[in-house]
Image (cartoon, rainbow, N blue to C red):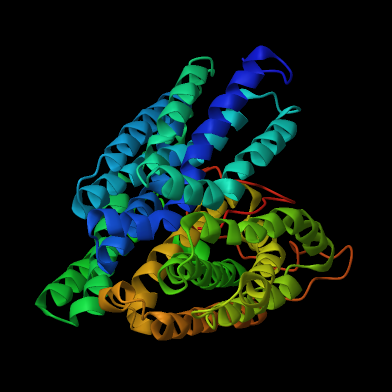
Length: 497
């Protein structure tokens, strides 16, 4: 039975879903700020720190789409509760890590748990409420869940500096316990007709991406030795197998036919470019502020607050404006603003002050993201048929996670940032080169948007938000709920990181 807004059951469902998604979003923002503290405590080198971030993103990216389908088939409350329990257990194991390998291994498992929570929280919410109450429930969920994203860097910086880096993981345990208690009151729902989860595709994606990332991270420290070449070969073979499975499967997690739609392919390429730049910036900037400038974890976390504040404030406005004017102008200018911000932030060096040197780039980054994120998501969903909007949003979300995964692996290699430069406080030159590469990739996303999206049609003409009206995609539809933490406008923003 569907739940009415304002009832005790409604409040408990909101509590469960907000806490469940909140811990996953919180984990994506608190860890970066604590990386230098983790490195000192565990005697971790730069590849270890890269894997602390990428291990989580690797399995989260690979299992994000089948995670939603698993809930549809086996029961949304059941799968969501399993994800909660696994996330809480792995958070404790992360906090107990005696060495970097333990931490990376538990982060891999934590990413799988996150893949059950991220789509599962919104799926549970939508299946639980009456249709007329769903928009208000989703809006409340989005507003509350965005708080964890906004204050993640500040909370992570404070915990790492005042308590311990381990506290950023232990803090998840009471939140998960409260969510599990509230989840007992969530009505069970399922839709077994949606098709079987594509677990083979997810496993091949994880193998392929893992091999490629291992090769890139290893090459940054040791060059293209035998280990890096072998890992790269395994990764390429895994990705080739993944594409073969997706092309042959009747209900793939990644319907390749969607990419025949020019606007869909273009907007996902732009997403990849924008989130590549953002993911690299969030990884490298924190290292530079702490290792290069000597800032505390709390100060470096607080420095990032304007990014999320501007993203949250501007995204609803950009979403509405893109609906009226078309998304093309926003997806051309927004990435260029982000690219300019990354270039400015790449010039930060020893002796830099916050107001004069850091804040201008931070403000420009937040403004560029605020203009970009909501139009990106709305075009990804609006350029395909309505029955495919859910899976289109899921694919776009997975592409954003993939971009961060690749950025953390590629940019230190591209800039020449190594363990030695990090340890001796001499990473400024490599950091500047890496941020310049990130800026160039992000600017390329603006060019792709200009080339693949049509100008907005005249009022009354067909066409979704300025995107090209697609030809019917041939891939079979499967509903996968979108997983951005703070929808604004049509399908609002994902958080940084």
